[in-house]
Image (cartoon, rainbow, N blue to C red; front, side, top):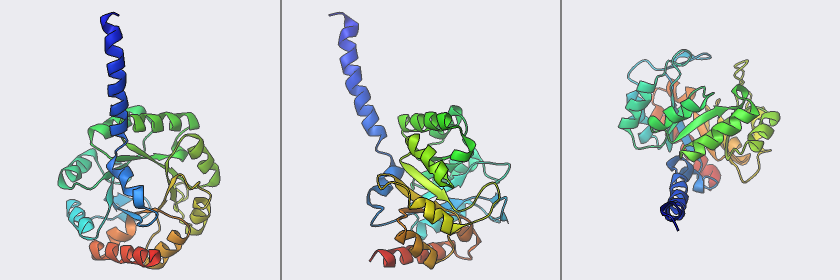
Length: 252
């Protein structure tokens, strides 16, 4: 046996261990008990095309507010042109909190996945409307390979089929149609009800009150991504606590 024949079996074992360790993602672990205790992801976005300017002061002040409110993770916009975010803001927040971070960006290329790894993102957003089915599949595979959770965003049953066929294990249904900016939660919950039980289900956009949280949980939602209603609240921490309390009441 030559030297390289000795090397390969050892490296195969090391790679197998590496892949298992990469699967121990903090964002993914939040969903281990999500059917009993839903996940709340609070968002930091300085502005939005639909709501205008949303953050007047220091965005970092929101981190401590969200922690006080019991956020399980934080979503950070890094798009500058449309949402006023930046990679620098993400890096600052990464240094400020130990909570898992979702990088919310218009990701269309493998280089952005690697960049997200460098930023120490725990999860990234992949939007079906932006990607061909083949590209979506490639980006999901690369994300999982480097230990980042790919959270796939859809708005319709047709997009759900694409996401499932691409291997998505975390799917978020956006109540806001990014083409029209209209919000329709009833439609989103209808789409969400078609997601197989083996896939984690999240609801994006339009969550403003306790009743909406309870209705969504009845439809099988495991996680919420909430931005505008928290950012507009006089006390984001109290607003988040109220929404979490409603979820606990519904689960009792």
